[in-house]
Length: 106
Image (cartoon, rainbow, N blue to C red; front, side):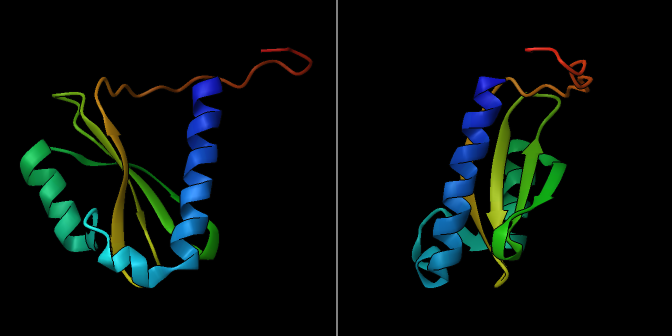
């Protein structure tokens, strides 16, 4: 659970940085128009969108993954349509964990 919190915190900081300076996001080599990023993830890594969320300033966070290879990529798309790669890795798994019982320290 600690890793989820750290990842969420890191993404929040990244979202703030992206929202603060959209022009620099366009100049960053890990950013491109959304259609190009999605096509590259599908063609090169076999990844498709697994989840989505809305961040500050209408930035959209998406998680792409391949159930075959286990690779995953987190992207953030700003309101101007530029998508940036935020994190990537291996060993993707789909989970559906229940919430801990009320009063539990878990």
